[in-house]
Structure formats: C-alpha cells, structure tokens
Length: 222
Image (cartoon, rainbow, N blue to C red; front, side, top):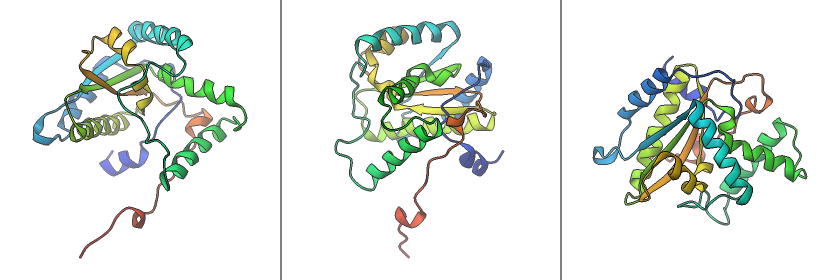
C-alpha cells in the first residue's frame, strides 16, 4: 500500500471486531511511527498501551467513575473552542448528524445519543487502547508534534490492515488514566486512540465525513 492509498483509506472507525491484535504488531507500528517529525527533535510524545485484562480492568474502573461524574473529571484543555464559529460550527454539526443518522438515532433521542457517546469510553470495542500524553511544560508546537506522531501511527495501522479512531474524549478522564497508567501528575493526557480490526458490517462504519474543497483553505502566491 502506498502513502496516498493509506491517506485515502484512513477514517475514524467506531466499531471493531472482537479479534485480538498481536502485541508485536502494535509494537512495530509504534516503533516505526517514531520517524514522525518534531521541532528540535524533542519527540515529546509518550504512549501507554492498554490491551487484554489490563484494558478490561481499566474500562471497568472508567465506567464506575463515569456513573458518579458523567461529564468526566475535567481535562487540561477545551476540546473545542467555546461558541464555535463558522464554518467550523457547521462542519462539527454535520459530522455529528451523519454519525447518528448512520445508526438511526434521531436528534430527539437524547438518551440514545448519550449511550453512543459513551462508547468512546469503551474504545468502541477495540482490543487496543492507546493513551497519548506529554509534559505539561510543552507548548502548542509540541502538541502538534504529538498529533503528527498520532497521524503516523494511524497511517501505519491502515497499511497493516487495522482501523483506528483518535479520541480526544479521553482527555476528560486524566485522574483515572494517571492512576492506572502511572502517567506523572505533571503530564497532560492529550488524547486516546482505539485500534483494532474494522467491523465492516456495522452501519456506523459506512459513512465518511465531508472535506472542504482545496480553494477554501489553500491560497497560492505565485
């Protein structure tokens, strides 16, 4: 598979097969992804991998904690800016509508939508859960470095026949994540990621987000 094919094939999967991913494959992907660029070669990313029984225990604890605090524990950053403006507001709204339409949950079914959102905190059933963290002393340039590492992980996963879903939703559970993984208190829980084999038959995996045309975001100066 060439890079262009991997870029075109990658999407955020939200249903996975109950099929384990070999640990050595996960190790290989994470190790090869370290070729991602970072300013000054800081390589600020730290990754914690949750698989097997460790993941089951972690998700059970998360479920218990969410019963007491359904909105999470409060993260180190806002996932979206408040009062999101156009065209970003419409893009986010359209993404949500397409997702819920695919699984036939109407807008008025608030409990149904909340249940689906809760699947974030089960890694959507994926056998591999990744948590990405970085030292809180790092700034926005290093956050973008972590994002580039994550993108590299996702493209390598596609090459290996795996699907992924980056999940900033995990940033709202920093206390529980740090308790389980041992991530230091002076680190930011930046994002999670689900990884596994795609459930191709699940309707939630049959739609794709839309992309703006090139002339909306690229300006050529010649």
